[in-house]
Image (cartoon, one colour):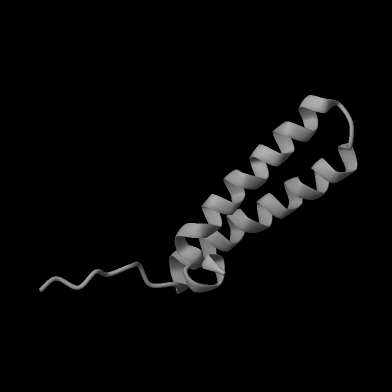
Length: 64
C-alpha cells in the first residue's frame, strides 16, 4: 500500500527487502530459480524508484 502512495521512497525499501530474500536463498544453496526471480523483482523495484524520482513529487511538510 505504501508503494502505491509514495513510490519515491518505498521502492528502495522493497528493493532492500528483496535483496535480503535473495541473500537468504543463496545462503541455503538451493532454490536458485526463486532467487533469480527475486533479483528480477528487485531490479524492477529499483527502476520504479528511479522513475518515481522524476514523476512523484517529494514529501512536503506543512510548517505553521
